[in-house]
Length: 233
Ligand SMILES: Cc1cc2nc3c(=O)[nH]c(=O)nc-3n(C[C@H](O)[C@H](O)[C@H](O)COP(=O)(O)O)c2cc1C
Image (cartoon, rainbow, N blue to C red; front, side):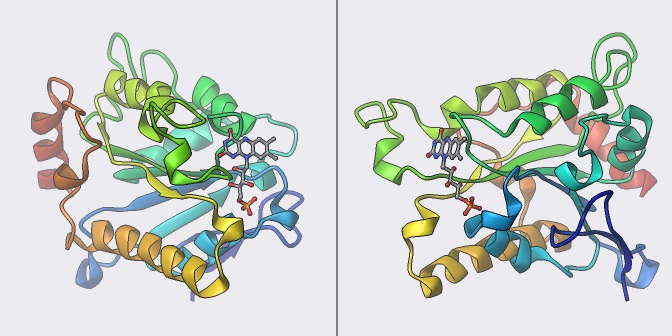
């Protein structure tokens, strides 16, 4: 059974749970899902996504709004979590063409100079970042000729470049478009696809290097750093 650690103020919100790795059951990648939804009680789509991955072994899920209701991100704690995982998933609804505010705060505080980037900042080299988002807008709105003028990956450029600066691989964003308008079976099918992606990356059935975002060139040193990590684990 997973050790369940509820975040501060977490009532009906999602949980944090860690399941220790065993050598008999060693994942290809240890996955950390950082979940952020400021109105979780009203959520439909993110709730379905979260339910789909909840209980997956070797996947740690943390609810940032529940953990940090006052936005006081604990850099040391976050860095400790980052060190023990290979793929960081930022799971959130699309808000104002980006993420909810706590994700930005988390980036500002957790990814310190000299740790994540800059002189000596190599702790994330060879790891991966994935945005798993839901939108209100339909897929065809996110196009140069569509209502929202930009593709989702283009709007997520700050995450692309932050991953690059930190020596990480940035994966193709997973997106559920207009999820609240989907019928329950279709929404649940999309959530299952999310689960399959996470479980496949965890097990090594899916090669993260084949799931890099379109046009994303790995930063210098990524491959060497990844080899070192693979040998060390
Ligand atoms: C403050 C706010 C900002 C939003 N910004 C966007 C946006 O920029 N683009 C978009 O497609 N949907 C936007 N939405 C819609 C949400 O992304 C959508 O309702 C959500 O992903 C559905 O997931 P949920 O049921 O888990 O809340 C926004 C919603 C709110 C409340």
